[in-house]
Image 1: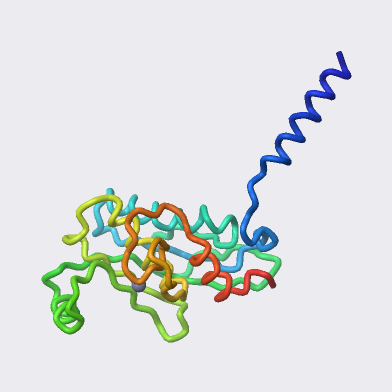
Image 2 (image 1 turned 30 degrees about the vertical axis):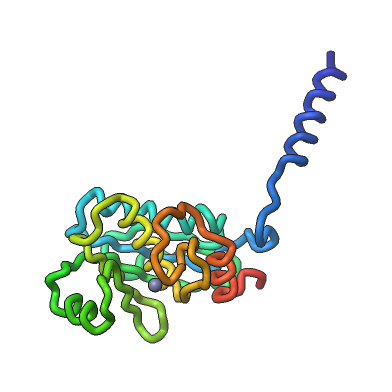
Length: 194
Ligand SMILES: [Zn+2]
């Protein structure tokens, strides 16, 4: 009986180890390299707030511990997390604006575009505000993807040359995880291997 149980456990372990998927950047997935305080303006609807959180969780899920974040109740530094290694901090505010807003109209005219979201950061890339033009975002997916894309910029990341990445130059509305290009952009910026 004991032998059968052991045999069963061994088989189970074997199956588990054989079926583990190969993980990109597996040696990197240890300590966080960046911690983000996120403040979401209460002027955004509850539904939009949830969609923004879903956009941030897309990053969290795909980065497997490389990025930590928390919601804070004011757009100011809160309690810092403890880390064995130096860790970068980011403070990100999500706010609302409208397509009637003068700077939005001006941007559209200058760039011959229809602005959906905008990231504005300080020169040290520590503080960022993400403006969502919510009267142009008509579904949950659009809000989540635009929040995720702009959040990438708020982390200091640039566009990637791929059409189905979160950081694609044009929003890719049907993605629900980071691509290898997104992860590479993140790891190049934060030196995940250190
Ligand atoms: Zn962009």
